[in-house]
Image (cartoon, rainbow, N blue to C red):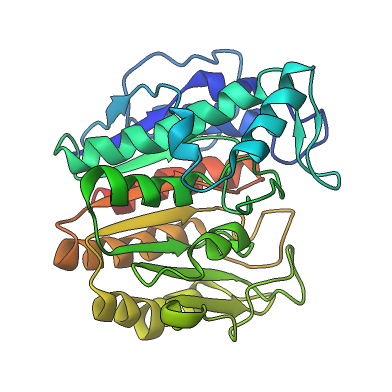
Amino acid sequence: MIALCTSPRFADHPTGPHHPERPDRIRAIFKAVRDAGLVDSPNPFPDFSFNFGLHPLGLPKLLEITPTPADPKWIQTVHPIDMIQRIERICRHGGGVLDQGDTPVGPDSYDIALLAVGAAIRSADAVMQGQARRAFAAIRPPGHHAEPNRPMGFCLFNNIAITARYLQQAYGIDKIAIVDFDVHHGNGTQAVFDNDPDVLFISLHQNPRTCYPGSGHDWEIGHAQARGYTINIPFDPGAEDVDYLRVMDNRVVPELEEFRPQVLLISAGFDAHRDDPLADINLSDDGFEQITRALVAVADRYCEGRIISLLEGGYHLRALGRGVVRHLVGLSA
């Protein structure tokens, strides 16, 4: 059983009329998974009439999970209380911009960010308690750019890092792997686990000399006792499915097999798609499914199949909707 955890409330985080990380991203995902026949529940956005060209796939229905807001104590496992309170204060006073210009928030954004973390935690519970073998949380705002002491890059709280800490503390998980295939380097996640040898972090992203946030060089490998547990794999602009799949076979899978994680987390960004406007990688819809299938095979061997996947980027609505569907198909393998 594969679980899908999301909520129409994620569309209530406002970013402005021309921002790429916009509420229509969640509307597109709701529409795409329904067009693909993966869920039966009514579409909460009936006026969103995007045509994805999808048809029912004949796969088992997803287990739909409703998230609840996270207890802020779990956010404090990654972020200091003063950062959390600053974000809440700005939102309660009507909103503003949290960083140098690309992370706007509105009055409800703090509450929606708590809900995003709650969806990640609820997905982890579903997997760890045997309700689902794997889970995908379609959430916003995304998280992997949020560093311990600052929000940035559209991200308020680092959803996936908090999920890893939750698994460590609530379930006693000793070894966690995080694979991030968003086109942008997961700088925030790297910063959280830079000194933690119990978390293997692997990021596949566009070369940082050509893409935000400018970090993620292959020489960034972690520090002290965690040296070697951060693995950055940058791709030059124009890289395609064959390039990513070669790296999956020759680098990512062997590293995961050597580490032998108990749970696998995925930062699932769909902005490496060839149609995405924010980068220059040329993955296809099928590429996302094949990457996912490779990770599922590892999870089946070492993690009892346990995967928790969280939405990160993806800014071309059709590519995002189709990419999420193909990711869910891969998780169903």
